[in-house]
Length: 267
Image (tube, rainbow, N blue to C red; front, side, top):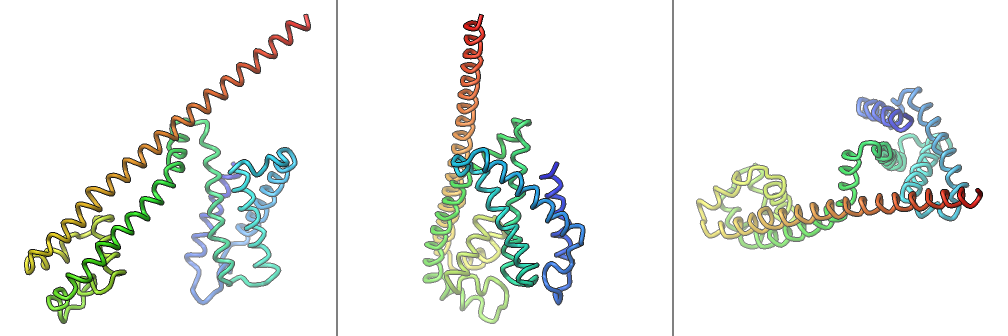
């Protein structure tokens, strides 16, 4: 209930910040009830964190949930110090700290264990984040390679073809950065692949080899490869979760058996 209430408070606070005029410092449009709720929630999280720290002691850092809660609480206090002690409600530090408070939403994952299907979806997604990250890095490297080739070979002709134009196609291949953005837009996001390419290919068919090669290697090949790796990572996470549940059941059975033998020995 507390986590769900916290999510609702964050939604109200975000809406209030979005509707706040630009000439006012950040946080000045936040309702008083939201500010009080944030302080109360921070106190509840602090008490919960202190109790777990007292119980687990040196075992406390071994849990990722404990480290997440510790980070959220520390940034909560940094938020209070920035606003009420340093009296800097509009500072960039405050914007950064309040952005990191979104990490509280991750606590909602704790509530999903009673629903196995939903919990497996969330756990599978979190376990594939590493594969998604490295897949994104490799895609950007591949796009950078094609962008470098496109700027060197296509841009001289594209400059003559689009001379006097002011649309995006006239600038799409003017630099490696813009060319990378163009390929990301067309190959990864799937937005208007032929809008800039077809006029070029009609005037210079040899450029079709470059754009078709980029399409095949990035969208048909590498994106599908990353998808298969993500699926494998999610399947591995599910197997690990099943093994952990099996080990927990075995431990519980051994504990019950030990209690049974203790009762027999007493008799």
